[in-house]
Length: 405
Image (tube, rainbow, N blue to C red; front, top):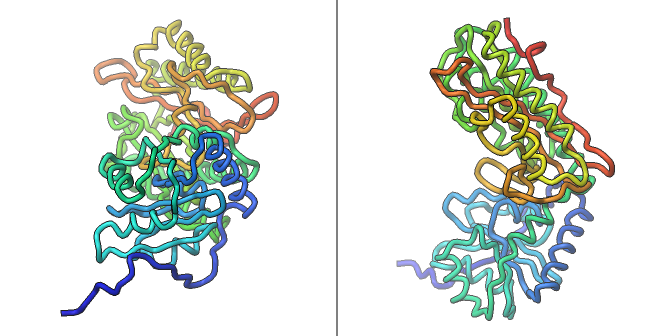
């Protein structure tokens, strides 16, 4: 029997040099300075970040959990990611800051590492929208804190305002989404499967990311390409359904560069649309163009939503509206992150300000059995500037380009 009691609970190892990260050191230092301002204002001595989006935002490291916990512990003068032994030194290479590796031979070694890094902190910041009740109870046991302070809202507000470097990366993502859209457009033909069209778009985007961002991790890029009935949900998965003439189609490309999400969404038809479908499509395009005109500094999310609701109501189409009209961009994905305070919905009163990046994406869902049945979606990304907004999506929309004959 081997004695394993001498094995460490956690350790450091620096194999290889630091990898190039998506942003400069000064960018990460600025983000941490902002976090420490939040900590000072709320009398917090240490923050234990646990979500993929916040750890990536403040350190550059995007973890792959696979059932294991991760952290980024920030104090007044330190920043350290906490990663699982299975990942080796990769988390250190891709962290702007320090890194500690915890072992799994003994339960709660992760929390022992967190305790060491948090030191004698009595008030600790957490993400209340991510930390589970079980994890919170364990944190209290190990850190013996006076108070846990939820800073999820504070960090979300910080992420809503993009730096010059962030906007540049988001613009690159929008460009690459258009590359995927072009590949999808070219692949569409009668009899081809949804999955084959989706793979053409994904492959084109990954090839372009590898070419133009060779230092980035190539991961998490995807396409949702839907046809016919499958267009009724914006997030419906790809299937093996074969395209048929007369189908309504939905193109959705999502390149992910270093955890930064961008998107392109377009309605298309395989063959000329029938009159009812064309009328619905043109109405949704009119809403899209109206929405783009409304996105500017000083507008509110709820105010934009109200204007678009009035438009659809006048067209007797409000009953077919599917979801909110747009959202923020940055570190987010279909399985992590969301800047919920910057969504174009009735219950969000956030004022648009320079440095924010939002989408305009109206959708109508017309159910089966109704003339023109299907899901109609358009999606552009806009950067809010000092006096206006700038559309960074270039792929054409509407019947003039997206009817595939």
